[in-house]
Image 1 (spheres, rainbow, N blue to C red):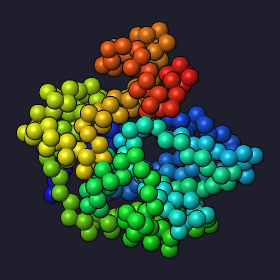
Image 2 (cartoon, rainbow, N blue to C red):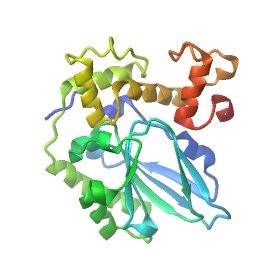
Image 3 (cartoon, one colour):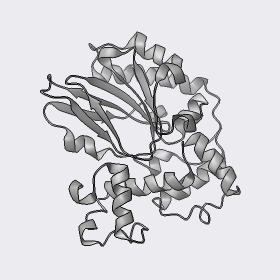
Image 4 (cartoon, rainbow, N blue to C red):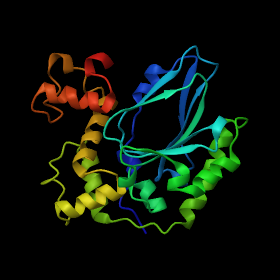
Amino acid sequence: MENQFNIRELYAPLQPTVVQTADALVTYQEVLPDTNLQPFIYCYWELKTSTILSRPFSYRVVADGCIDIFFDLNRVRESFIMGFCNKYVTFDLETSFHYVGIRFLPSMFPNLFKISALELNNRVEPLEIIVPQVGQFIASHFSPALSFPDIKSLLDVYFTTVVSEMNLSYDRRLYRAIEIIFKKDGLVNTEKDLDVGLSSRQLRRLFEYYIGTTQKTFSQVVRFQRMIKENQFKDAKAGKSFLDQGYYDQAHFIKDFKTFYGLTPKKVL
């Protein structure tokens, strides 16, 4: 088994709204997993309150093409998994929380656990239903007393074992198509540019199983991620950037941006 390329080298999913909403009362951080896990897991993340808030906290997640496992350290028996989402998602949290998450790079969760990503499309499910063994591990090994470095160590050991025991296989045609999308920053004609030796229908089935959506929607998310990473929407107010992003008019550009982010480019600025 050998993959053609390391997704991490071509794609870095970004969650900018975390930085914008965080303050002294709510903090967010990401850490890299062990080196051997980095082709599969983009990061471990932590979102927590430093004190009890005066009101519930609204947490927005933008579309990033990834699958996340997450849980509150205060309620480790209730862990969850969030699949590929073709729009932003808002979580209405309580006034005190301590969430930990595992963000898998696109296609890697289905590769590791042999579960179709399409089953998780635009959904948040209890982890015990999807991969009960991971939910059991979380419930039996984590507690509020653990520091984030301790949490990282436990996750590294566990997922290193998972990877070592899995019979991983990569369809080179699928990963060639993913590579093209990343290298073109999502600006592709999915009917013409993804010539990898598969029909459009065959490729769609692979994308739905490993990514959770079609190659077209995944390309749109990759394009959106490039925009927010490089602030390529900064001229949206002047109507200059939508053509560079492959849009025919500004209205569709703003509509797509709001769908993936939850705000218009103007409000983000």
